[in-house]
Amino acid sequence: MRERCEPMMAIVGRPNVGKSTLFNRIIGERRAIVEREPGVTRDRIYAEGEWSRKSFSLIDTGGLVPDASQGISSLVREQVRIAIQEADLILFVVDAQDGLTSVDEEIGKRLRKSDKPIILVVNKVDNLESEITISQFYQLGLGEPVPISAIHGLRINELLDKVTELLPALLPVRTQGCLPGCPEWSEGLRRTLPPGIKVAVVGRPNVGKSSFINRLLQEERLIVDEEPGTTRDAVDTIFRLGEERFIFIDTAGMRPRGKVRHQVESYSIARAQRSLERCDIALLLFDAWEGVSAQDSRIAGYIEEKGRGVIIVGNKWDLVVEYQKSSASDTIKNHIASKQARESEGRLIEEYREIIKKKLPFLNFAPIIFVSALTGQRVFKVIDLLREVTKEQMLRPAKRILDRVFEEAKSHRPAGRRAKPVKLQRLSQVGIKPPTFALYADNPRFISESYHRYISNRLRQAFGFQGTPIKIISRGGRKR
Image (cartoon, rainbow, N blue to C red; front, side, top):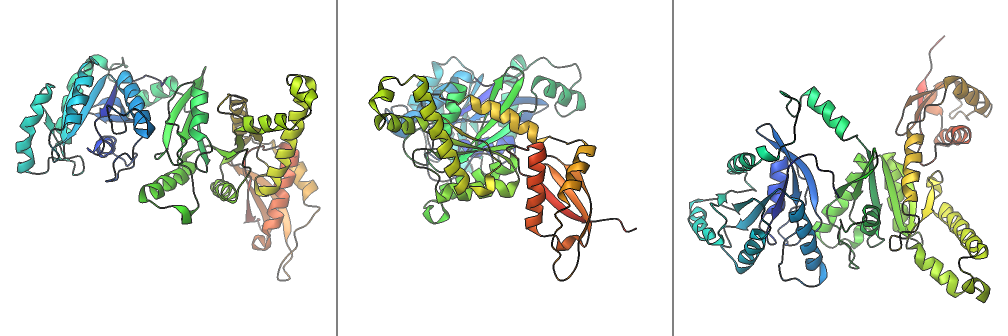
């Protein structure tokens, strides 16, 4: 379950009434994808909001189709049900331009059974003619409707005033005189919720990214379906183990540009790529049964460009093992739990690792693990790897040891170009995440990228830096 530190509101309604537009308007940023096409939002999307010095959590939900019994709509309905269950307050959004519909009436009946406070929000009230139609929504029996225009920002303040009237009894206890945004409040929040490790789960469509996160959480937090492209938004999910906090960012599957057919999908892919800018570590998920594809290699290139830590995760390993069993000798089939069978799988893993290293040579520093989101095999071992990569990203070798490594490395001198010799002077660490080193020399502009790679390899041999890229910057040395 999600951490609860503030009152929570869920935005609920049928498809295409403007829930995501309202969500973005309240939080003050374009977090949820907004399109005229109905059904864009599918998973639950969480964010924090604040009004009149009172803070709250907000959930955006997919369009609710009450009678849906199969397909994506039924999965969205389950996500909405969970959001209603989590929420302390419900914003029920209807569309003034469409008027009162039978679906609105059915949703209203179900919401009344929840025994949660409900604010009826009539969206798309842009003019006097729209305001006249508001009276019909009294039939829902949910009190006085609040007319707004989410897209134009009209009367949002009145809606939030009504929200905050209902919040005082739900607000958490705070230090007297401490308001959100002040240093004391920020420090208290950091003590309650440690910053955590941001982990972007990226890969091609249908490789099991959402299934992987659901297996970690042990709940159906994200919609999973065989239809590729189920995930649209980049969805943040908090996962806690004791005092540790991980923020997993589930992303849309990244297709090659030439195969993107819809504008919504292009938005989704752009957000998936932006998730790499705000994460600490990327989990590159690929289908172990299908192997590493050209598109997997492109995604790996995006990760390398951003300088993020990376772990390569082969999902659907259970299919590979089952195939191995079916083609194995009768001895292994009959003693599948035996040492011989385990050794056979171990050899298979090593063979696959070598294949992946050849296909993704520029990520040869990344740890590789094979999991099954379906069975849970080795899924939680990914947490151990995240801990290790985080340590490696923050590593600062002792200066005396770094100097010794540099002295040994500079015996292999860089070849000067354009008849300009290069004299190396020193190597200093100037940053972390990724570990960044300044290579001081005279004529530094003549140091080649291949020499940077050479220095990086020597640093890895000496210190590890598993799972993180190393950045080398050439700088001019001091003149003597």
